[in-house]
Image 1: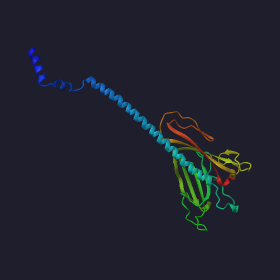
Image 2: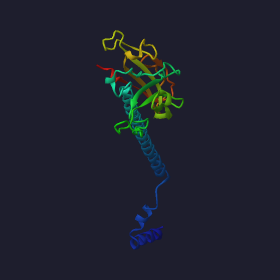
Image 3: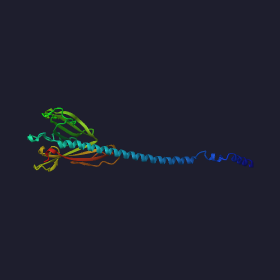
Image 4: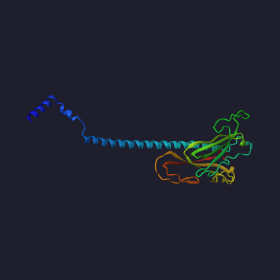
Length: 267
């Protein structure tokens, strides 16, 4: 026994770092399990944090895209409504064309109206100058008719025709999608019933007595985000004269309304 102790002491004197080497041999099983457990908790927190950040980014991106769609739809609709009924030479006292056409219909589908407008224009449906010139070398005024509706793929779509007169119109856009993820469009028309050039009320399409008494158009659009974000139940949404119950599909929906005067009829 004494010899063994002497041998151990001799080895420690000869190899003074031997104890340190033994301490570097590794972790015990319990230490490894604790490390794995702590690492799992840490990684779980990181994953949850990353997932929340991605969801927030997706939500912000989809809402930004929705608002951009609203701005574009507003620009297009306001331009067409404001210029509806335009006459190139009003001083000649010629019979004016209707600003709102017979294609303006109420309830063409379960959730949407249809808007029909027309005007005389030097530019066609694409915004290009008419290649035909008038007597002074300017692009000639042709008749432009536009119809707006929500199609079966939830696009706010336009059908646009252009030509020298109503009998010679050529379709340049046929149900062309302008804005995606539009679920409904509702339209009302401000009418002047007593001839004082002031609007007396709002009516649906074809509910006016004379089309020439329409002074302004109000449009409400219901748009939805591309992706679902929650499982909230559906709530009833009111668009002008209609109430809509959208499905509980988690998509975020926004209602945007614009009101535009028909410029040629404002005194």
